[in-house]
Image 1 (cartoon, rainbow, N blue to C red):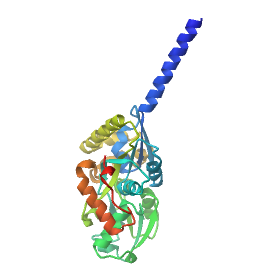
Image 2: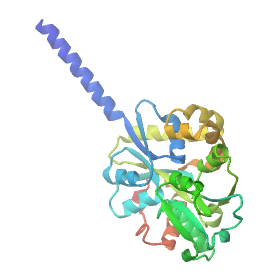
Image 3: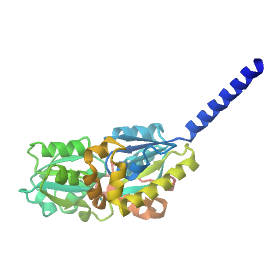
Image 4: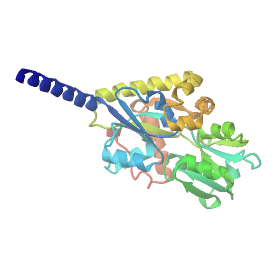
Amino acid sequence: MKKLLLTTLIAAAGLSLTACKKDKETIKLLTPSGTPLMAVGNLINDKGLEVEAVSGPDNLVAGLSTKSHDIIIAPLTAGAKLAIAGKSSYKLEAVVTTNNTYIISKKNTTLTDINDLKGKKIVAYGQNNTPDIALKNALKTNSIAESEVEITYENDVTTATSTFMGGSDFDFCLIAEPQITALRVNKKAELNVLDLSSYMSTTIYQAGIFVNPDANQSRCNSVIKDIKKNIEYLNEKPAEYAKEVLNKNQFFTKMGEEVLAKSIPNANISFIKAKDNKDKILAYYTEVNNYNAKILNGMVTDEFFR
């Protein structure tokens, strides 16, 4: 009887150790909804990966500050600002979204050039982060003073879009994919679209993959390889990808299969290795500093790149 009990206890202990080991091997990934979530969408429910999607920048900043996750996809400006301030030790592995920043107007409001924004009302999002920086930089580059445009900020792109379409008196909306396609497909909206990246002197580097230096680096590398393959697949076969991710998150379900498939070509989701493109990323940060030095409060060092 004692022998049986001892054997049972040993087996239970073994199972407990195995469970602990599995827990340690699970990589926790935090990402904003929208295109960054699309970049990892087909990895949701993968064994050994826990994906958490959030709205707005606050949870991402908190995650980078507290090391709550192994991998965090966040705005490049937010990651740099915290690193420069000594509040984050996460390393930038890659950029996954670029140049996904647009201005839209409804059919009867002229929008053919950045100068059409003068004297108008814009509902925007991402204050002091990449979308806002792109907008302000485009205005400054084209000699439009901020006082000549009335900008109201919402917490995220979804709220900004809803406000714009909800009978408001805004002339324009700062927006991104897949929201543009969602308005056209789901709301049958007739829109004018202006690509803000055409008014920037550098690429707009938006969301990046940041890796916790205290995480299991081997497991993180494995997940990063999967993310890269996933991005290649979604760009090669957007229709198939949309079908596969549709029920993996409520964001995808809400957008719908057609919206996801049609938005991918204009969403500019890619995998850009940060260390190999350091000069270009630093050029973007330089442009941010030239616009407003208080956004980053300095410049990142080589230690920022993984």
